[in-house]
Length: 358
Image (cartoon, rainbow, N blue to C red; front, side, top):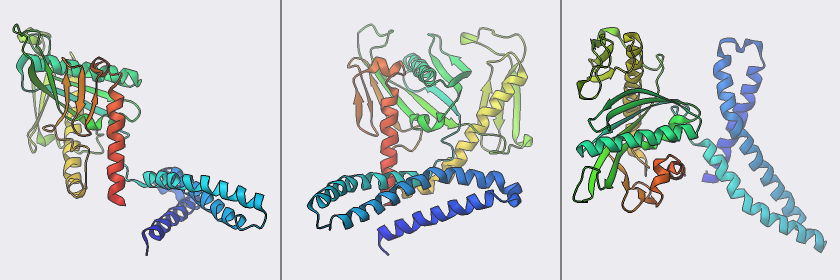
């Protein structure tokens, strides 16, 4: 069987499945299965619409081929002209269907937990981490997403040793998932008297937010410690033991929250972060075999992978995974030009996944 006939057979199976689902949903007996069937039906809807457009175009091309054999010269010329235009459209329609058939990342529609940490570079790394955190905050505002600061650990100079936020809205994880990794900065620090350019780094982790149904956490697996909240330099923020540290004993993951004055609220926030980290571990383990078989990848999501360099003296930002450099560092840091990187990363990932199924 040729690749073309195999592809067409797959399309016809999907059309038949869509019709079968429509029939089953119309039956009163759908009952308990209704939600599941309805979800599958709605997911197939755009795919079937694309298949119908492709089928219609192919039928039109066959009809035009018959007209092109007409003895009337005017009719023949018109048919040939329309055939050429349709032949140009067909590959685009086929490509659209192939894109619609790509497996979807189940986490793409989820909200996300953003974690930014200072890496190598001391105070300068912490200052850069704070700037990155604010860049994502502004980017979220531009997309009308909700950005909730969950926990911030400040350095003496006002930088962030660590900052965690919850971001909610449409397609949050889908757009931010390639931001995970090491972000490197090259510039003259404010504390540098000799004018030497320093290189520092911060790590970013973007985790899909997990629900309680996704990750079952046994209370017996948790050690919960409470302590007094403190600000930079040990300055007291709260005089009660409201800060919470949760240790997940099987994995060794430790989450601390002290942003709220209520111990209960801090525990709830810490559990939210813990679920996201455990869910991401499961995703990483599940996807590792599939990722290993991929011909190419935009990025592994590994926090140790250097993904981007921000060079302030030259005003440029370079993404090393796609070899894209923008000379508009101010707009990138303001969140305004970040979409140029994100759109390019999404397009590259899509192209790589299409190549894998060819």
